[in-house]
Image 1 (cartoon, rainbow, N blue to C red):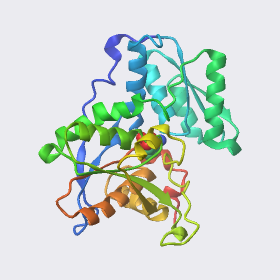
Image 2 (tube, rainbow, N blue to C red):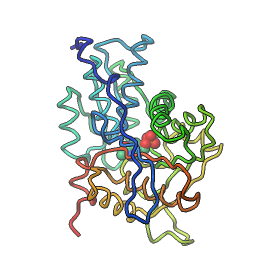
Image 3 (tube, rainbow, N blue to C red):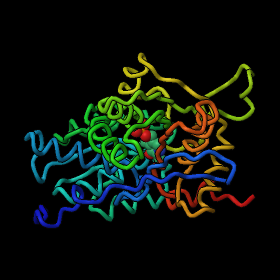
Length: 309
Ligand code: PMP
């Protein structure tokens, strides 16, 4: 099961590009990190390789051991790929309504998929993973609370960005929050370099609730962006972070426009870009604003991103 060392490429890939993206000639220029170009198609390759390689180096796990993670999305696909590369067994625990493609991708890397009830959502999967890990004596990366999740972005993604951006500093970082690893890790990483960086956490909101209406609820329409699950983000939130609400419908439309310009992104990239443009309007044309395009459009063929209107 263990691969020859020479087959391992995850630590040897080149940095993902950082591109100044403009949607139209009068719009702001936003520095976008093209994380959909990571090997499994999302930014979660960062945390999967960092967390599992570190656990192996520390002797916390050994080749042939089993890793169990709850995720309905990119993390389980990234963990399956990293496990294949590192000679580990992988089990994804996910709600039963995830797409057939997701299951097939994980299984094609040699992973196993265990389903939990659709009605219990991601929380049911998290509980299921705890139980299964106990039964199988498996390692649980626990992406929502593992400090190595933000550390992967602090010590790797942020370093790449600093090396790529003109002037070597960032003025603002903008991202939707799932585990919070991206926003927290990048913010800490930029601060390590002495940059005075403003951090913006983006909340997708259902359109009719904007503009002072009372209902204002968090939208579940942007996969990967969830509320209230992350201890990583909750700790960071006590410090300097601005929470920004943006319209989910508009976010999905921006993702479609990015795709038409040749960026093969998912809905959360539209969310991030839309929010970053609003930050640019506040901070002015000279601010260096960074955001992330977390994953690829191919994951969303069966969703409203591709719905014919
Ligand atoms: N976008 C997508 C597509 C994601 O899968 C995730 C993470 N689940 C995020 C954004 C948010 O990233 P993070 O977990 O680092 O907060």
